[in-house]
Length: 219
Image: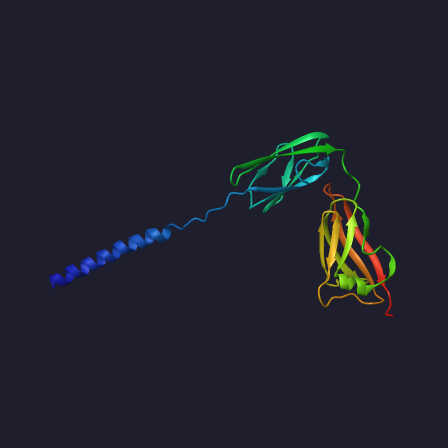
């Protein structure tokens, strides 16, 4: 009997020790390492000439945490931050620093007078008010382009006259907007379409895009 109790006590002691080991191990969760953010790009790019009221977009490899730029206002989240002035005319150097990775960089610009002029549509595949547009040619090319007077950001869409989205894929980059055909969404004859959307330049001047065109009848 005594031998049995000794064996039982040893088993209990072993189980207790094991529980302590498991408990200690389970309480220490592996902390995921957060990659230090690195500066990726600025738009407009460093070295550019910018208007005094330009907003500069900074992009990082990951969330940079708190971003500071002396003499400027910083907003935004995720991988991007917007740096806003107004900036004084002349040579400008921005000292950018961020907390995730304790990183820093500097950007230099030449600042000109404030830009208060909104971008305009300067051309493209079709003109506003154009009639007898050949839908077959556009469907074959698979793209409709629209150009602007300066670099902009925003969105455009191809719609019917009633405002319904036709389903083409819109993209705006630099001074150009494109609408790419999605198979099965080809435009038809004797129909009025509108390229609609909103774009803005780096200074925040906005333009409502509205380019209307009508396709020709079947021959």
